[in-house]
Amino acid sequence: MLREVGKRDRTAEEEFLARHHRAMPRVMLRYAIEKFEPQRRAQYLTGVV
Image: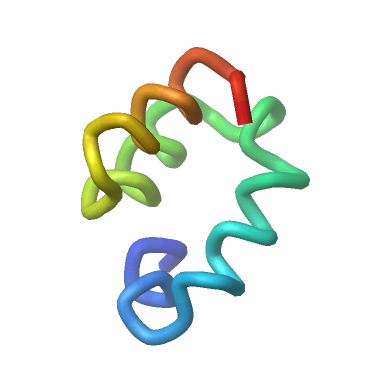
């Protein structure tokens, strides 16, 4: 669902992820950020957002 929201409104997806990325299941996070640039994706995966 998050991935689809990101296709239409990237800002809304980023705002949601900024608040919830640490508590999200890893698989859910990976699907949500799969279309992000590699550097931005790495930031989310390491928790440096």
